[in-house]
Amino acid sequence: MDLTKTALSIELGSTRIKAVLIDENHIPIAGGDFEWENQLVNGIWTYSLDTVHKGIQTCYANLVKNLGQPIETVGAIGVSGMMHGYLPFDKDGNQLAEFRTWRNTITGEAAAEELTELFGFNIPQRWSIAHLYQAILNGEEHVKDLAYLTTLAGYIHWQLTGEKAVGVGEASGMFPIDSATCDYDEAMARKFNERIASKGYAWTLWDVMPKALRAGKHAGVLTEAGARFLDPSGTLQAGMRSESAAAEAQSCDLYLGQRQWYRPRERAGGYQALGGGLRRHDARRHGGRRSGR
Image (cartoon, rainbow, N blue to C red):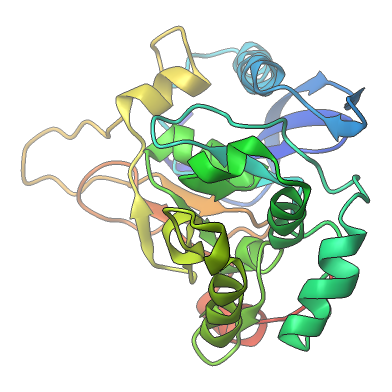
């Protein structure tokens, strides 16, 4: 089987992590899963990152077993996770607080009251910015050390590529999106930075948020560390091997935080990550959507 014409989908849902391999006709040919449940820890619904790592590797290994052949490369990879939430890290990549999932309704003071009034825009409790501001209002010690804030799908993409980026659809569950720029709303971000200026943090919102990328934008390549994160056996390769330096190789495109697929494009080189995950015409229509999802 020519695996360069396949696409690998990884979905981190609330009760299962799933990995599915589809062929060029979008027909599933193998799959694997890992069952998990969130835990209530100190009043927070959460999943540990150790369990995230174990689940990703287990469902991928089960997929390879069910396929019946080793996988050195695939034509595309898509990552989708539970949208929204709060995953904060310091400058050395250390997790600063438990992963706060979409299920938590603990940000009413920040989201339903202050931020909604400040922005003139409804901010649901589950959005990342609501969790961040609630942590600030709570006086949580870790906030001063914040260097990166992301979602579960953004975290997986970071581990696979080393890049701090999410598709614009995923980003719209972190902070309001300006539909004209398909990026975070600059005026609202400025208001937020002004609101927290008296705290004296060394960071602003622009410093800690992942890049919001439209469909088709370059978002990184699958690194050696990323390949080992997914496949500790060492079989999955970080780059596409070609018969000669000038040979045209099939890339492995990674689609960020979306569930829609399209056939990967031929490119020279190895694994290329793309932002957004929607077709270009869809990105224009949906990318800047300000929803309460």
